[in-house]
Length: 89
Image 1 (cartoon, rainbow, N blue to C red):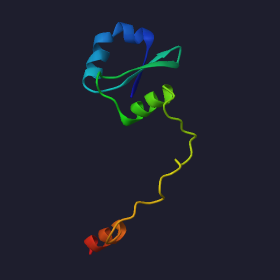
Image 2: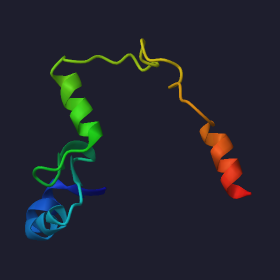
Image 3: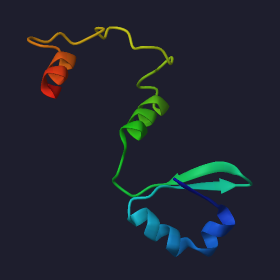
Image 4: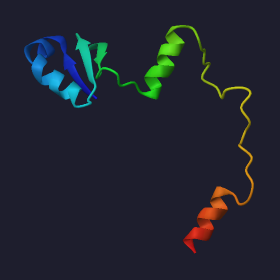
């Protein structure tokens, strides 16, 4: 992600918009403090979706492992590591 100051963004707005159109994200700073991120329209990462849920107080995360999720997903047959080892032979 590229970082740009407000003054530089104003002077070269067209150039930075071209970068955003091509899929880049631009971090805008004001006096070396991040104030905004410019992202292409309609493109949301999983991280952004989760952040929006947190901002709306729909979800809460304490930073620990989520409760209620089993430690592993049970599967039938060989484990993934066994399959990989067998495939390497």
